[in-house]
Image (cartoon, rainbow, N blue to C red):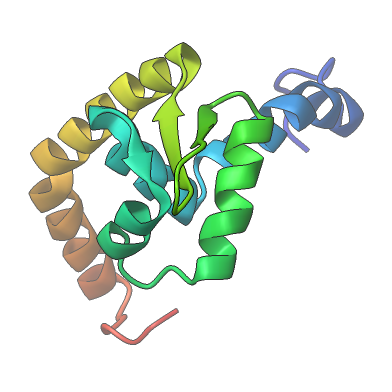
Length: 133
């Protein structure tokens, strides 16, 4: 057994990580990230989101929008027009998140070749092919 930090128990780690994990699970979800990116340039309508996010179903878009609104990351504005017009817009908190996402995507772009090379070297050293899990 390691003689490292013996004061850290599994319960302590889980208790501290649980609230953070809950938030990260929501905002780092595949659809949430794409919605935040799509809404970053100003108010956007449901149908515009649906068209711009490839592969998302209407139901998943609706659920994700509702969750992002519940979490305070989106505001939903319904205009009393015929037909009804509903727009979604990022809140200041989500704008801050978007800035962080831009930093992360910038980092990923700068290091993607290095990561690909590292994966190939690891796979070669460990006798793994492309279809290894």
